Image (cartoon, rainbow, N blue to C red):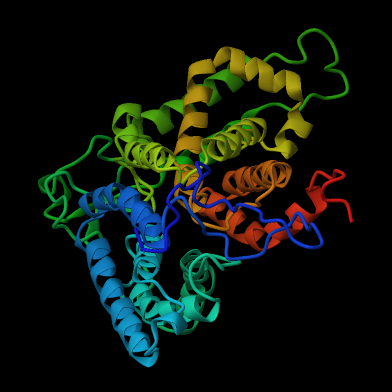
Length: 432
């Protein structure tokens, strides 16, 4: 704790701001947003500590490449930080904190795909401290630089490299064989999860380190789309009592689609919950993210209500669009209801894979813990989280490979002050 810390810090979460009276009684505070009860260093150090277990599991499941990403990115970021520190002789003129740079590196690697070329996060790490200094240092961010850099690498840099050069830009989703954990190379891919529905060993893969494995959310979405194609469209004459009933052939086709998915493509739910599934480096372990959320809530870094509000809206929106609006319009609600009555367990399981294999747990815990992500006023925060969650659910259903929740929060973050201004609850205290 620095010497200028107040003796009795307030009990509000650390990423909130105590609004001080101003001459014009403006209800909207200005940055920096990071104040007591914890110092800035302790704030970022706490989030770093919470993120470590999820990253460690990513190193275990995806091997040495993610670990090399972290080490090289940490090295280049530290080099730039030390170089910039030497340029700022007086401490008061230095806008950076080393723990802030370290957290940015961890978030960048956590959002990276494990098969990315190592030089991509390494190069981003080289300019990361400079970008953090340009925006004003910790607590003054209108957008999280590391999050934006990871998204830009996926949607701008990698497509350009793939289209105009022969540079390696990553391989298919995979996980390491169970006897190649930690030390295996995720690029050494062979086999197919279709032929080996259980977690294979390297011997079963002819000595290769990793097995090709489509993300369960992608498989679940594809299976739901196949079922939607089989569902009948009611004709003009089908207006009676049996209009919502599936025929015997349609029911058999749906049963075959579900059997192929569950026997050859999808993992057991027990292994999936333990984190044995493709994902971002820091997003595979639901258990690690749950402990991170509990720890950050205990340290007053994370608002539990914000997490609950975001996840509830994400779950509800995902449930509503499990079958896309186009499918519901084509086949009708009664056909969907009849499908749910005939295959309740299978459809619910597909929904669980679609939901839990998203980046919503990572975004709800790590991204919402970063200062400045959400608005400061209670009403603005609720509307902000609802809009972000519903947008993320729609994007995730259309493209399950996208880090939809992270993208939605990152896109709306610059508009957080607008939510505050528009949705501030007026009273005689703050009336102009």
